[in-house]
Length: 482
Image (cartoon, rainbow, N blue to C red; front, side):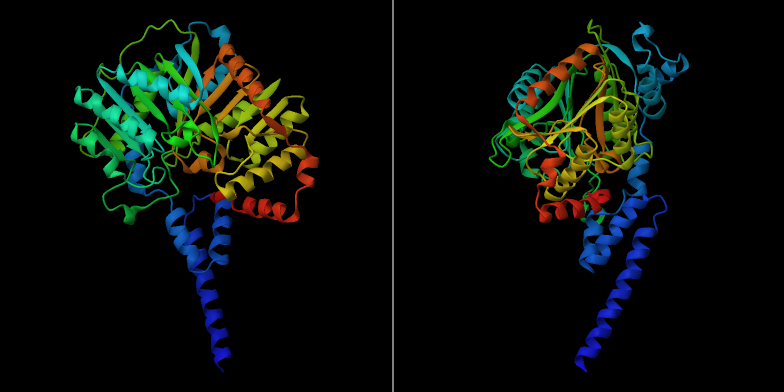
C-alpha cells in the first residue's frame, strides 16, 4: 500500500516538475531554441535542483538592467561614427582597406565602433611582461585610471594591483574600478577598502546592494579594459591574479594575448568603460570631456575598431565579426581559444573554408579549466579533426588567448571566446585590427606556440575511451547553457 502511494507521489512530482519546466523555459519568446531544449534537459533530469540551477544560471538579464545599458550616451563617439557612416568610411588611404571596408561598415552600423588608423599596438603574451608594463603606465598616470576586469583576485598580484591604485589615488589621480562579482569570487569589500578610503571608486558590475534578489550568474562582465589618462589602453584576455603569472600548479605557465594601445582607439575603450560605469553606478555619472577624450597624433600605423557585445543587444556584434572573418578568408585562418564551443554556423563556415582550400588551424588547451566546457571543446575539436582541419592542443601550460587571424591581414584580439557564452551571454569587448604587420606578428606567435603543441588527429580521438567520448557527447548537449 505504501509503495502504491509512493508511486503516485512520484508521478505527481514528475508531472508538476514537467509542467513547471515547460512554463519556465518556454515563456521567454526570444530565447534561442537550442538553449530552450538544453534547459529543459536540466530541469527534467534534476527535479527541484534543476530549478535552483536555473534560478542561478538560466534567467536572462532583467529588463531594468537592459534599459540601463541601452540608454547610456555614447559620449561623443556616436557623432564620429555617424560621420564615418555618412562618408562611407573616413579613411586616409581607402585603397589599403578594400576588403576591410565590409567589417568597418558592419561595426559602424551595429556598434557605432569608430574606425581609427593611426594607433601604436604592442602585443603582450606573457603575464610578467604584461603586468610589468601595465604597472609602469599606472605609475606614470596624471589624471585618471579606469579599470574593468572580469576577475580581480584577492591574492598577491591582486593586492599589489590595488596597492598601486591606492597610491595613485592618494596622489590625486581619479581611480575607478569595475569588476565582475561572480568572476572575482564575491564583492571583495576588504580588498578594496584601502582604495576607497584613499578616494578611489569601486563597483561590482550591475550588482545592486540586494544582490541575491537580482543574481544573474549567467551574465558576466567578461571585459578586460584599462584606460590611463585617455592616452593608453589595454585590452585582451588577461585578468588580475596570481594564476596569470603562472603561480598556480593547476595551470602552470599561463599563455594569453593582450594589447597595449596608444591612439584614438583608446577613446573607444574609454567610451565603453563610461557606458558600463554609468549603467552600474547610479550616483556618479561620467560625462564627455576633453580630459577623458584627448586628441592623439601618435604617428602609428595600425587601423582598428573596438567592438563590444552583450545580452543588452541582440546584434551579437563580436560573433558577427568572427563569422564574417571566417567566411571571407581566402588563404588562412588561425584561431586560439580556451573554450571552443561554436554554434553550427561557425562549424559550417570552418568546414566550408577548409574544403575550399583555406588553411585552417585551431589551437585549444591540453588541460581543463571547467570540466564540462573542456569536454565540449574536445567534442567540437574531434568533429573538425574529422573534417581534415588542423587542431592542436597547447601543452606548455594553459592557453587562454582569444585570437583570430585571417589571410595575414585582419586580426581579432579580446575577451570573447569562440563559444556560445561569449556570443550571447557575456559582456565582451574585442579589438579588430586591419594591419598586415600585426597579423604577421600574430602568425609568428602561433608558429612559436606550435612548438609546444600536439596535433589532434581523427586517430587520436578514435583511440579515446568510450567513457571519455560519452562525457564529450553529453557535455555537448549542454553547450547552449555552458
